[in-house]
Length: 463
Ligand code: HEM
Image 1: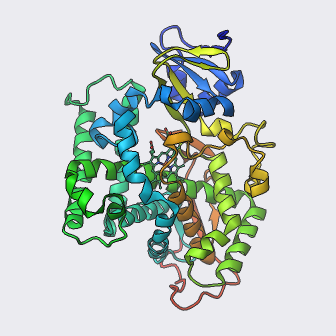
Image 2 (image 1 turned 180 degrees about the vertical axis):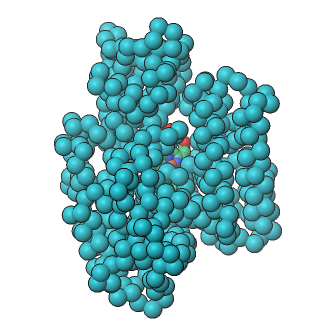
Image 3 (image 1 turned 120 degrees about the horizontal axis):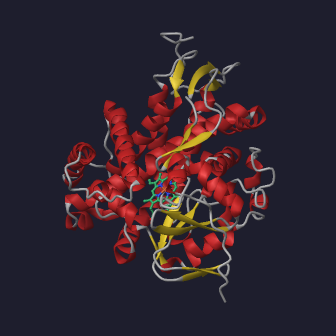
């Protein structure tokens, strides 16, 4: 039986909650969470609900997932950038993509990428000098971009990684701006912003087209993601456009989320010296001055928990959205057909009911024993149900490898006035200030075995 007792979040008579949401995403969802576990919201004419209880979230993402789909506005905003792809599609189209891609992201395949991940971070570290100041956001996005392109195509981006990340960042900014206005302006209309989307999409598509041509010519190694996903036969059946759509989606979904998980992990480490000390001790004990091997990733248990805790407090995908395909009952309230539903890993992860003293950064919440006490759908940085993140194993392994490689050589020191927390920028979380850090070599320096690049003095000492 339904009673429609859900509270309504106050808003403007015409815009509803749209302006508040657009002005401050995180502030908005936090104020909605304070109203209750199921709260009515309205974005202009679009009625919806903010859902903030693990049992309700389970219904949306898993138990009743067939009654939900990705909202049409998301698809409209991204359609000319991503094309038909796993992230925005629904129904049979989604199922087809998911079935094709999922096996390649199974842990046993992802493990093949340890070496590529290691090589990409080592290459980045070659440019780091003791005492220098680096922009951690730029460094982490560069590394994760190199990694995803190399794993997918067995191709080397060379010095184009920064250019590619800048193009993706701008494209997602423009797509998010479309969503803010319901994507009401058709994508084909030659507005300034639509023309920019077209120009930037062409840059990415041309680059990927050249990688796909190499891949078709058999130049990519056997372990490239594309080979695993498609195999030479299936790949031959797919058009370049289809391949490009899935590739752009995987790159777009994978590099920035992981890069900012790394940035926030370092932010948390800089703010929590006791945690940092434990992580550094673990890295020294497990690696003992040598390069990381696959088996080490499992042994770096505490480091993995540190990343998981960073994902609790700073889930880079801060909001998930769905739309109801039919009326759905949640907690006694009937959600009408075509209602928008918002779920937030950010508010769930900061709820004291599931995470006592929620702002305390405590990686031990994620030990096997302690994790049992966390309701399943309270911790969802990778989403949940059938549409759980395809790259969760990939991202966790990548983050641990990168953190360990940096921790073997440096302490990162924040500069005065640098970020203290997070804000949302478009689809992902960002630090609320700069993340420029000073590189302090380890003292005493851990003995790094031959094969490591010795830390060279800074060419330029910044102050
Ligand atoms: C720490 C890094 C990451 C975070 C926090 C993250 C988060 C998420 C979340 C929350 C979803 C679910 C979205 C929804 O239900 O609406 C998702 C989906 C997805 N993620 Fe990730 N992701 C990360 C890394 C990656 C990586 C590295 C890849 C690929 C290599 C990837 C590929 C995907 C794909 C393809 C989907 C769509 C799955 C589907 O709809 O079936 N992600 N991700």
